[in-house]
Length: 168
View (cartoon, rainbow, N blue to C red):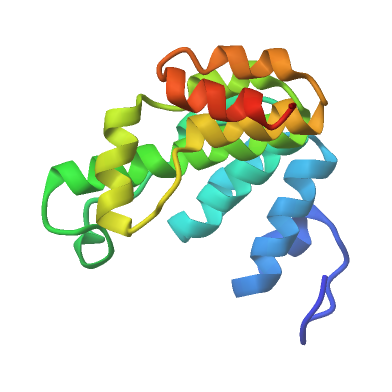
């Protein structure tokens, strides 16, 4: 572990550590032991969510992305309405699916990314200019040099053609 406290990397060391030390320690054991339950021990939800995303990528298990959550008390970050909270949670889960798909090279995980309407609403709110699902399929088609992955973009002929055009 880094920082001022030099703890041995033990589970007890995680328990007595605080702040970044505990965060690094629990993520270390989550990955080393391939056990996402260590993420639950993190106090702050952002650290917990990052841990779930990291272990989902490491284990190539997108089901862990569904553990990402944000408490209702964080209205300052998430906006005052339930809709924006749901969009924020959904977008965070989608980002986890995206990173798991890209890390694993498994294009089937791209299909777990939510429908375009939800993403468009969130993207407008956060001023994001790309569609995660299309980005996922396009990225994996290029990474794997496999144009047939573009055909999974079955919700938009224009986006599918744009993906396929990268291979011409």
